[in-house]
Amino acid sequence: MIRNKLLLMSSAMIALMYCNPASQCFAQDHKVIVPGIQAPQARPGQRNFGGMIPSRPQNGGAQARPQRPQGQAMPRPQRPTPQVRDVDFKDLSMSDPFIFADKETKTYYLTSSGGSMYTSKNLKTWTGPYNVTDLNGLWLEKAGFCAAAEIHKIGKKYYYFGTWSDHSDLIEYVPRRYNVPHNQTYILASDNIMGPYKSIAVTPGYDYEPREWDCIDGTYYEEDGHHYMVFVHEWTQLIDGTMDYIELSADLTHTISEHPVTMFRATEAPWSLEMNTIGEATFGLKMPGWVTDGPQMFRTQTGKLGMLWSTWGAERYLQGICYSESGKIEGPWVQEPEPFLANNSGHGMLFRTFEGKLLYVVHHSEGNGPRKPQLWNVDDSGDKLKLLDQIM
Image 1: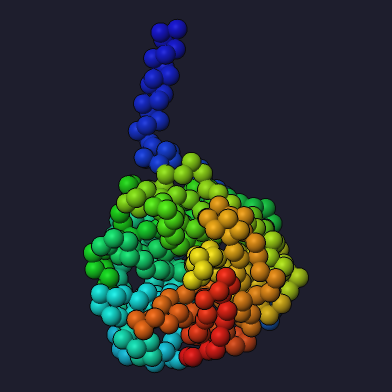
Image 2: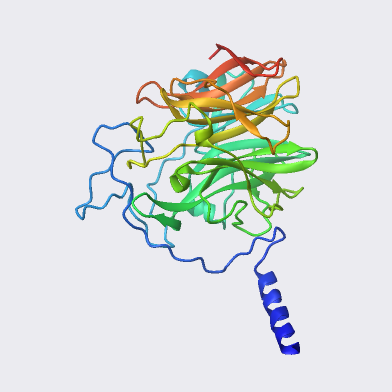
């Protein structure tokens, strides 16, 4: 009996050595996932999100991109450092725009997928791009590209939420579907809004969401003194994508939830359509499924809690809205009967100008053209958000 107790105590001590304060345990060596045949390739000329459709491999496999040796990064082509310059809003090209209005500096800060920062005093002329992150020593540095970057001010600090993807580190192989990469939304912080933003995580390279989940587009939400990350559990892994949340520690250094909570599935929205049915390929692959993308939480002036989120539908990419019946993050969440904005537009967010106007920034694409940001007036005086006129 004593020997068994000692063994149990030893096991517990070993477990504690590899656990963080959020009770998420980390193995020093992750299981090696061997890549395999993915979903069929898109047809030449088919609509496709995420890059060019590659030529078919000689062995008949359906790989959307070159497979990296496990644990090694594919060399990225060297891009020249962009020159900081003034750019008119209509000349910007970007996905997933996010604008933070900083009251202290009376300046607007624009981020997006790609991770660069632009600044403006009037929303029309923007100066940038600026590199504001320091990823030294993190796996994020190897991943490089940052998707759906956001800035939030909490207390006296500024926090940078972004999603990084490491395709050299697979978390799952879904047969004849997808080689699922390590995708995580990570949190960086700075005392200065222009950075440099550095990791504050309890463990370098810490996974705020479950490592075995394909997670993107994390955003910040606070309710009754509790701090949450609302994020996407990708359809590429699930087929029917979900929106989830986890609770963060007060200092945002780790997760304190035992597990994430699912808020809703993509198929609960009548305007979310199945990708193959509407002829959309992803990364050159014909993967079936329903998409969740880009959450942002908001409250109307009457106190109604809502969420902006995006998916694909009859007019390609679209912006939808759902509302919480309880007025709390736990929901239940009810989807609006019609999209908020369709016409190949989406991944938008709300912000208030220094004059008090509520604006909505969203990206839009004409045909196969580049994604470009737009600005719209919105009305939040009632229980439901109303889209008004486009101003830029």
